Each structure stands twice: as structure tokens, then as C-alpha cells.
Length: 112
Image (cartoon, rainbow, N blue to C red; front, side, top):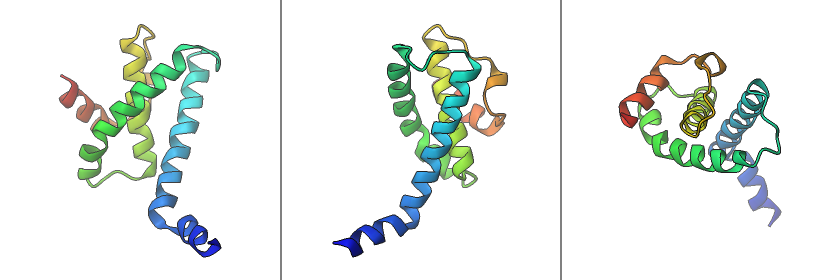
């Protein structure tokens, strides 16, 4: 049983996903701090859930670009979260999001 757990921990795809999740978590925390939103704000759960769904929708298109590393996948999530928050009446300034014109164009093209 321990061997299976060791294989899982060392699996390159699992390690990659963990790095992506780490990017998503740290960027989300930074955005919440920048926006001066309480960690206990009841809207956060809904925003996170909607952002995750949007992120999952765009993941295949972003991956198909062939230029998405873990950091840029984190950027994709931040832009999804920013879009959800803005649509819900909490405008996120562009300066609070990572500069990434390719991701902005991807989201704009698919959400227009």
C-alpha cells in the first residue's frame, strides 16, 4: 500500500497540479488582500466556485496554446476570479491581475 502512495506523490502530473493549485491559492490570497476583502466574506465561496468552473471551461483552450506553464495557469484562474467578482459587482482593477495579454484575449474571445 505504501508503494502506491509513493508512486502517487512522485507522479509528474500530480506534482504539476499541486504547483498549479499553489499558484491559484497564493494569487487568490493576494487578490483578496489587494481588494481589502475579508477572508470571511460570504461571497468568497460563490466567487471561488464560479471561478473554478470558468477556469475548468478554459483549461483545454489554454493548454492547447502550448505556452501555459504552472504560473500562467495560475494567471488564468486569477483572471477568471477577477471576471466573476467584477460580474458580481466587485470590480477588480486590471492592475490587480497578472499582465498576460494572451489570457485576456482568450477569455475575451470566448466570453464575448
